[in-house]
Image (tube, rainbow, N blue to C red; front, top):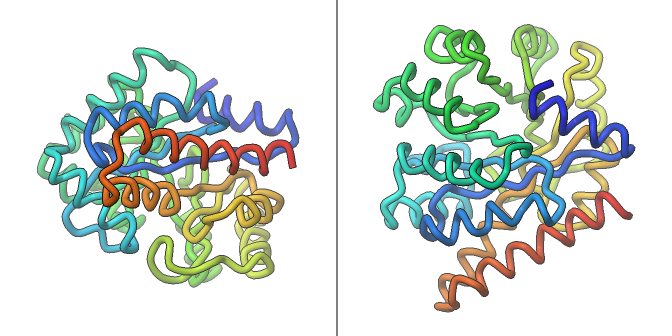
Length: 271
């Protein structure tokens, strides 16, 4: 059983949703980033979504845009991002790792090399924001053939016909974008999200997780109660931004992130 399926199976057996935490690789630097990521599983995180920093992250709001800028300024690139995953796997062989980003850096790196090294380093799936199903020849077909899950994105504006097309070859899980617009700028509406999740579930039985706009334990709990999982990203990287601006040391930055994700996990898993 793949790490992705195993994580969902464990959560299902415990009658709860999975908790996915997002961080940008190398934010604010490699060592702080890997230290936070390594501590996430012991503090209730089931999946780790790692952003591949990019200079023009068009789907991301100010918080994640700034996290990409900090990471790039610290010298992070796609090769170092994959090395970060490899380092994480030296201590953890069970937590699913999902890379999220844009196609330009992968295209420049070489898609075959990217997929091969991703698998070798221990990546389980990828989310590429700017590659719709019409562009499956670019990366999807090769990724799936090699066993690297390609996670599909669904938005509130996705029509029923489009939904069928997008979900036709969905694997791993479905990522439902709970708001219209960019990350971290609005709060999702539970009723609207619930209605759209029912549409998705009428087409596929693949697990569906909710991301974009979830920032608090209460929001996390309400979204987790209607889905297979939730993602929190902007709220975490905002803590890194705040700590960096205050000039706090790395341990303080790490502690603030870990305490926050622990609160989210406790709310989801222990009510």
